[in-house]
Picture 1 (cartoon, one colour):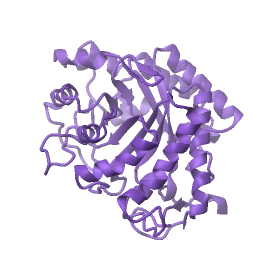
Picture 2 (spheres, rainbow, N blue to C red):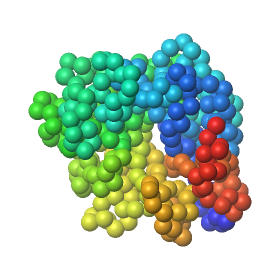
Picture 3 (cartoon, rainbow, N blue to C red):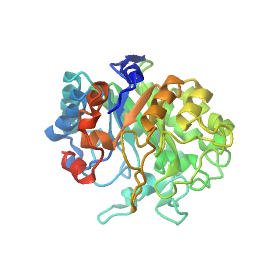
Picture 4 (cartoon, helix red, strand yellow):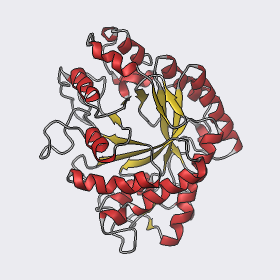
Length: 372
């Protein structure tokens, strides 16, 4: 049971632009591939509405494909274009709003991370900054500079459609080795034009995407940007090796119109740059170098560390204390919860009421049964 009185501090409202949240708890984006043909159905609306009814203030959807032929796979991942699709999303946003929640659409292009699949046509060939995958192998093709404005506009179209469909914000997925992260990471960006080389140049296209989205949604509609050091195949990867580089990486995104930053980490309680500060998290560093509101994330509510392919070690017993310490110190403004909300849609209310002892932690089989 969580008895620390500081928990109630997480249940204060927050306003960012046109978005007001009833508390500081968000649902982290988690792919489901449960929208046949890219169209979200009534089950998707019910899935997200259950978490809003359970107290979650901000739902960040699973990755949603932007309208670009090579944006993502499989087809059951939802998209954000077309009459049927937008009708489906209106039902989703309406259901979340009816439960008192707010919802952001995560805009996603997988780049070479999508790989090549049977049935792909030439227009679906994986695209990336340099035509290489996350391991450095040749895959797909490199995007030409002439293609980039149209690709940025595809993000903008998706964002405009999201606003039309009743979303309260958008999150641009620039993390985990997907397309925008492929531009940011030196190991996947070998370009010699104005979009590669220095850290500033590698940030250029993601910043152009943010600027296009800002134009599409207007001045007050919140734009969240998710980034990460780690990649799906490299947990030790780094975009920034120190806080100075982090500031150089994020400044162009902030200048282009980002309102909230979402540094994705696997463990929220680990230091971002331990040589500079043994305690300050990546979320804390992000807020320190930008001054923007920040979403923290990473193993919140879990009893064991998530380690793909191997048994997880125990989460430190002081994990919740550390989370509250971080919030009290101003390291983050919102905390995103992932797998714990799969297992218990009312996890947020249980946290508020000091009733988490009713929930025994994340169990994969139980969580999967509640995905739908």
